[in-house]
Image (tube, rainbow, N blue to C red; front, side, top):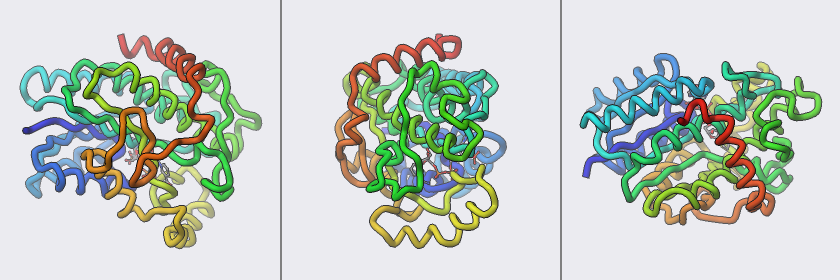
Length: 307
Ligand SMILES: NC(=O)c1ccc[n+]([C@@H]2O[C@H](COP(=O)([O-])OP(=O)(O)OC[C@H]3O[C@@H](n4cnc5c(N)ncnc54)[C@H](OP(=O)(O)O)[C@@H]3O)[C@@H](O)[C@H]2O)c1
């Protein structure tokens, strides 16, 4: 039966690869890309020319107003019969900054705004539209483990704080540094996992939500905020990492991602899928008290955009 799947982060990186696999594996899906600039329209036109059912709605996830408008536009199109029932949300867009002092237009720290708050606004504005069975997949990261085994020292681990502080710039020491940007990133992914646990308790039966960890995927645009030297290493040396078990190629990460989105990878609601199988995320990431406090804080912070 025809159904709608919404996707962010489809325009580049392994998300772009996943799009092909999602469309191939679910020919009846209407894919709605939420993307900034002209990239979404260009990708939708390209895929439509190849006979795929894809449309694009502009959304800059750095602006929660833009996220709200995009979610409402999806809702309007469903109500007016332009789109079939909603059965999927793929929240793949994510950012990594080289500092913890970048602010979004709403006054939130930009990493937290895109990696956490934008997803929350999307889910909350669309939550009544999901029809059973639905699957929501949020791209998380093994950076949330914060240990050498998972990160090989490439990314600093998370540093949990009061969510009201995490949502603002300068939550971490030496906020102008690359290290502070890395801590903001891994902490935002830990926050995403906490919220996945809370959503899983709150969403109606039949609407599942999962976190997907692609592993380390060299060669994507994630490091584009970094200097030329880091980008050179990412492009030239890091792809060799894809030969180790720690890393995935963009092709592998995209294919595994699509399998999770399409329900081909079995996983229970609230779970963490590491590439191809459900595993337990870090011990720190199971904390009911933090999950509930984060939920309350995120609800307060995003209320102007969710109500
Ligand atoms: N690469 C890794 O090693 C790795 C590991 C674990 C998890 N992840 C996660 O995987 C996801 C995809 O990352 P990637 O590595 O494929 O990076 P990427 O190549 O930079 O792709 C990121 C995607 O998110 C979109 N995006 C970013 N900011 C946006 C905004 N403000 N509004 C709308 N769209 C926005 C980008 O669109 P634009 O083209 O407009 O920028 C792009 O499509 C992220 O959530 C990342 O945190 C990556």
